[in-house]
Image 1 (cartoon, rainbow, N blue to C red):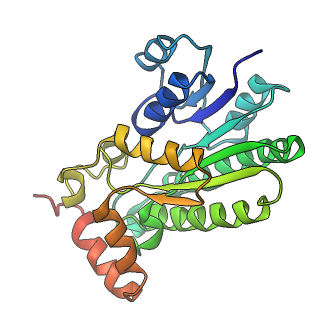
Image 2 (cartoon, rainbow, N blue to C red):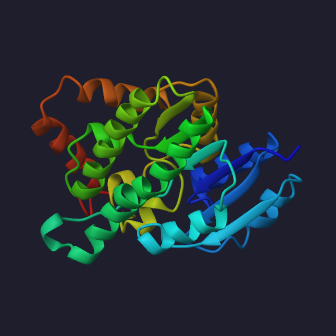
Length: 257
């Protein structure tokens, strides 16, 4: 019998790469995509003895998503890890529309364009697992990261709703909600001079393991780490004006100097 198949997006580094490693160690063949080359990631994943197909594509675009779906073809997907996403620091009024639209298209539009056809096929088969990377940012008013936090609020909510819609189909949906993690996120978001950008961050391997285990057990959502869980709990009772001020202290440009 052929190995089961896992798709992991944004899998060349960070949380995505660590999730792909976990899938490989459990014997899943991999179809992995990212908008950066798999120079180091591909050999590491192939060393697990499974089939690894890599695609370099911009999943913010319909063309990029189509490239991934075309490579998949008619093969059944056992696990879909929708992990692609990126941030954008700084004041919204100073950002170019092209930049914030790319955040929305990556985190929301491209994610949904990928999930919908695969989830439909999973439901028709009567089995499958979907892990979506949300964020604790979705619970916070994100001053100086306003568009990113807004997209993650959407993803956190969408994941719970999709999971409910699919609850009788044999398909589970899990939302992984990390906090600040040691990845390329803050460099790509131009947030290295912020307080959060310079703070100690969570290990992506630990975050990935938490998400993978939650998906395997069919949990609807999981937040990594006690500190992050406390932030989410506080955000549930504090007014958004307060969480916006708290976020500003962490994310305002120059706050780390």
